[in-house]
Image (tube, rainbow, N blue to C red; front, side, top):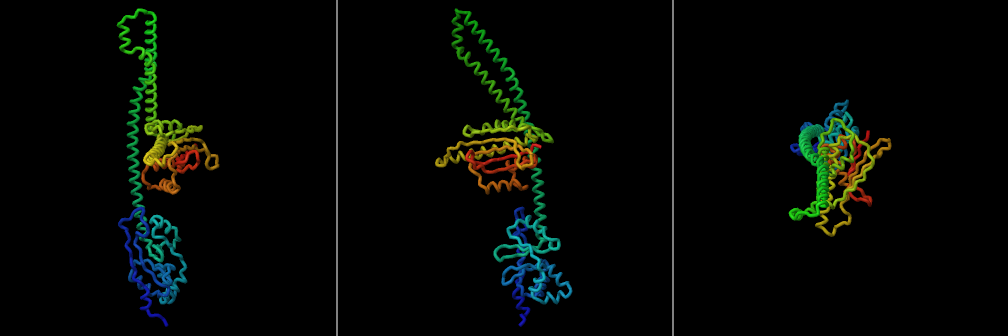
Length: 450
């Protein structure tokens, strides 16, 4: 006995549209945040019943086919219309159960999870064959919970996100330009201050040799007088005791040596500031990376407490074509990160005496020329490692993923990553050294020599 139309209608639920959260769409939004249709039909439902539902809901993109409540496939609105427009299509499909139509239509729908990002889903949808680009997308929300997504809604959301992404890029570019201008102004200011420091330092340095020579000559004359004059007036004796002449004679050369050492250190510091704040040329210039590293270490000397030991294992490096000022910023950022980690770890151990380790805080800097791909191409490798707590594999993966994301949060390490990879066509790596010599985090920079 053939079932009546009312029995078929009882198997069809009224389509329900979940509006989603399109008003608060963000770059991290997922498919479950978009408008989704809930409409399914069993295979024994007549095609005319589904056609009536489509006529009542002109925006409904398709129907999910189920068998005994289990997901089977999907038929889109336009594909049903195509089958009905074929010769004898109405007789074949309209008055027959959907099982007949499903046996003809063997296309596999695109099924995506509800937590799939919109940007990723749009890219997968565009990879479908051209004749299936209009097909709805099946969104799986959970066990036996399937919804229908109109591809037009996905495209609208995708282009909205592309607009947001473009706006973020513009704002990021504007911020970078403003930051670059600030850094350039600060660099010019510090360069001027360093120049003003170097002028009096050079004056002091240039006159120290004369003062040392004059003082030696005066002491020699006084010594000659003491030998020639045996009967020294009491007034001179009292004056020598009052000014502690013997102490002055002994301490004056030491004082001059101290002034010379201080002037030399101040001169090196001013030169390091000038090199660090130097405005790079348009094209890379050959530079000595060892001098660059030493200058940065000198600037960070106040942060490198006596507890942190710095070991330098410099190899033989040729002049490396680079933007030396930007690389100085990279070295500064990495060393600051290592110093912060070591200081925080030392403070934590002080608060927890049971965790005190016998290993003293250490930073190791190594340089060498190597080949990484077997092609003979030479690379310069700079490794800055510390013996802080080992970084887990998951944290390393997240860190490298953040580096490779264009819209990542602006951090010193992200800036360093862009300088090495984008400006110098290099490689920036962060990994954990598990060797017995130094267990900790390693920042490795690879720069091509060509």
